[in-house]
Image 1 (spheres, rainbow, N blue to C red):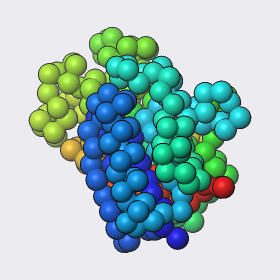
Image 2: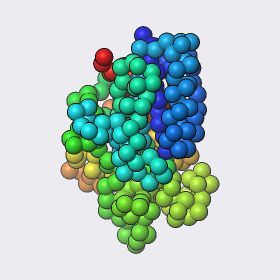
Image 3: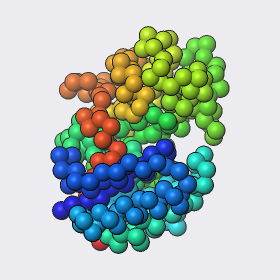
Length: 291
């Protein structure tokens, strides 16, 4: 079977047709601008590909917050977001009606987590977490083989954490100030230092603070759900890969011997799918779609 996927991101979207990582038959990068322009381009691309390649289901891995409970009136709709014009946009309805195939939708990070569990560093695990540290900070949390659910999806990138001594910068999140996203995301670093992550030297003291913040996020995840592994990706980590070891060391320090992490290699790992974890997450979601 063949599947179509849409990774709907805050700055760009990746649309593809594939059956697995080694069998991507079509791929297109589309800028995220206004909802009408972006979704219109995605619709036309999918319709062209449906005629050429054919596909059996569509997966949408979207930036959040987004309604993920099928019985809820907000299913498939973008929630409160700082992205102009996108609040309340019904992504699922628009794309599903255009291509007329079964559809599954979830957050981009839940999709990435499912992709890593199917093809990457989470293979063989039912309890797994995927963190992306890029423009924002998102967490895909899988428990018992399924993304966590309540009245919505998890938003652990917006938890507040213990701050390093002497660091009183108020943070950049428009909703929470010094939550994890407001302290450790790429947009937070630019707001604080005026530089993108790849322009800050690897030995700059700021990375000690970023690693501590992300270790505190991992501490919360470990205590809440005890995943057997945590993968951390995204643009900030790609630019500063040394952070992974620092985060693991600070996580062990933070846990203080109360919990012992699994000993089958590094607990904190880079995603094996790299930058394709997100786009392939949309394919992994499509594989779960039901008519």
